[in-house]
Length: 440
Ligand code: SF4
Image (cartoon, rainbow, N blue to C red; front, side, top):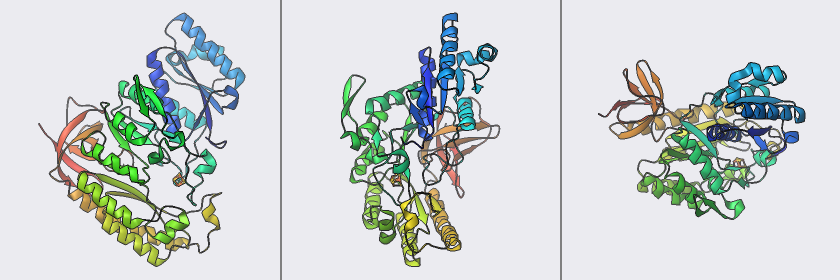
């Protein structure tokens, strides 16, 4: 964590249920880039998750709020005692906001209001539209902070420091509690998911009485045993990523890889300080698809990077044609304050960047459409995100929330709710979404 990340102090009181809520709030804060600090004085804001079950707990909670106010001054109160806002306000009128029990969405809204997380499309792990309405049935699981790479367009290492992985036991404990609290899909995020554990030299840790290495393959295998989907984001294409494909083929984790490739031209990749081996990436993609035909591949690209020629850009379009990625996010390059790329020669004029972005999106939207077409007739489980009066909005194994498409099941359905899994057969598609019918 860097000095620039907004920092939150957290006090959790009360029963195990409250602890689960605390975990959810902490997970969300970490995923959005907030730092969690152990001391009031270091925090920009303190959250007190209270208990109000018996009088002694009420008093303990009120005292904890008072202590946080004295030491820090900026305090949000949540949890069971939050249901009795008047009691809190009477004793501590200066608290910033009060939310009730199990209301983590409301807590996050208050955090955003009082301590906004900076947004940058190149830096954020989460989609730009934010996560304040994240339903209870999926959760972001942040496994590490920072990054050991030095991509020239990025200031993450300056902001958040070198890679710091959380011990595997801690991550798995959190995952287990999330699943116990009703989460049905875990979205594994970090700046560089495949590097997980490198900084700890894969040191072993304890989970459930077993000794496990802090390593991505081990983590994926363990997460795969939980009764929830596991989806991996931000997987840099290191060789050991190959080890994940069999886990996907056997259904332990979702057959989904989100790999930020950023470009395909070797000279642009070199200028970005990214590995320049597009041919190898294509060969691996072919191999992965042979081993796991259901694999969905998502990637992101930057167009108009300084020095990008028309030839470089054509190389990228050729790569996209060949790779046939399912989902692509693309940005026109824009300088980030403090990034090394700002000093590179030959900036691409803004109209050219925008024109290339539009061309790339046109090429890719046809590819994505063709990929969706191959899904027609497929039978698969989907996770319901929302039950509407005349249709279900769901997602399949190939659809990450917020960034990918949906699986839409038309009709009025009873007896199902958000967070349920149902089996469907895909019957149609449009530019982004699939249409499906439930299997009896
Ligand atoms: S891999 Fe590169 S782009 Fe990603 S966080 Fe690290 S330095 Fe930034």
